[in-house]
Amino acid sequence: MRHIVAIVLFLGYCLQAQAAVDRDDMTKQAIVKIYTVAKIPNYLSPWSSSMRSSTGSGAIIAGGYILTNAHVVANEAFLEVQRYGERKRYIAKVYAVSHQADLALLKVDDDAFYEGVTPLHFGKLPQIEQRIVVYSYPMGGSTLSATMGVVSRIEHNTYVHSGESFLAIQVDAAVNPGNSGGPALSDGKIVGVVMQVMNKSQNIGYLVPVSMVRHFIDDMKDGHYDGFADLGLGTQKLENPAMRKYYGLDENTTGKLVDKIVYHSPAEGILKVGDIITAIDGHTIENDGTVEFRRHEYTDFYYYVDMHQMGESVTLDIIRDRKRMQVHVPLTKTGDDMYLVKTTRYDEMPTYAIYGGYVFSPLTRNLIRATSRNRLKLSCLASKWQEKEKEEVVVLLKVLASDISRGDNNFGMWVIDKVNGKPFKNLKEFFALMEKNKEPYYLLEDKDGVKVIIDREEAMKKQQEILKRYNVEYSRSENLRNNTGHTSHNAVK
Image (tube, rainbow, N blue to C red; front, side):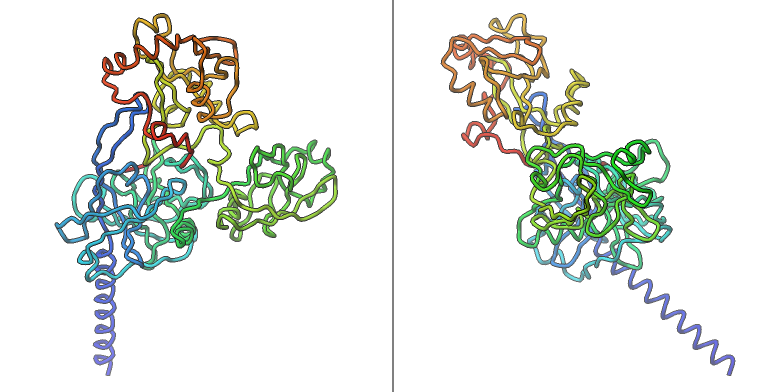
């Protein structure tokens, strides 16, 4: 009898082991290697670009989509994908992208690509110390790699790709170039997407959590990406005893002080400077600005903003003039709608205009990253919000040396405040002032009164000669040539 029981147990163990092997093979079948050829804009010479090839990873999910990172396919010119265990590559295209959340969905039109694949499904936000396995195609080989690890912490962190802060999962699994876009699985389900690694550290990687992935996919169900909302507020922590006493707060009252309502903020007319936000959607905001999203786990209170889709609203409990009340703020804006300097640009060529060899461009974070000139001042501008009088910064990017620009050749990354004595709000207004100017000169000034003066007639006469000398085909970017004006849009590889 004992022998029979032993045989039954052994057979059961064998069946379980075989089932595990089968599940593992099914998982691998859904892992994809991504080959990207990207057109990389040159923000210092905005009329030119270069080509770069790279690889990343992805996973086939329901609906015939391939889930990966936005930075794996950013600026893509040509995409191919390859399934596990196969050598054939299939042409792919980007179906949807969120540069904010560093996520993208790809599609392959050839149905043969999906034959025999069981799509991966989504799990829940993992617990601390929960084991995960990352499937991807990192550098050092061409075959699939599986890396084990555990979840170390979950909290808000800066996403390198966009520079914005969202919930992120820190893991101790090794993350290397090529891992990006690979799924992190627990119990066979996706709990995150490999995003980036911490520099100068060993085995500290970050995942885009499954909650962010679900938000992105739900957002795209109507075929249009709206993004993650921003309240457009400046807030202060309330940890200082004197500040708490000043506002009449007792020991049991916590929250954040509103010290600024940003221009264009959806909270304008709803919140006031001096309001104290004590809770969001019924969740207490602590004095350090965090909320408890799970028992004993805290992160930035924007966690509950990010749980909403654009067009919805959040409920805020506030104290105003020492009276408690509740308000509802509609979520209608992203941070990019309110930043003075937009977040990093992808999938588009830079905007520029040239007058007599003087090159003008809106200030972008791409431009700040590309140069060391005037870095301190420009980085300071990148930390500011829009104001009623100023929605965008325009710079004299560089001067293409010629006989009409002698003495000005050292100007570069120079912030312009006025054109012929007239201030402007954005590049569109700057461009209109330059185009409509009938004066003999373009008179450009900064806030300190420093001037650059361009002879308009000489600039028009010498323009083509200067452009030809520097091998510049067009005097302005395509969006300005098409008279569309300027529209603002919106890591490890």
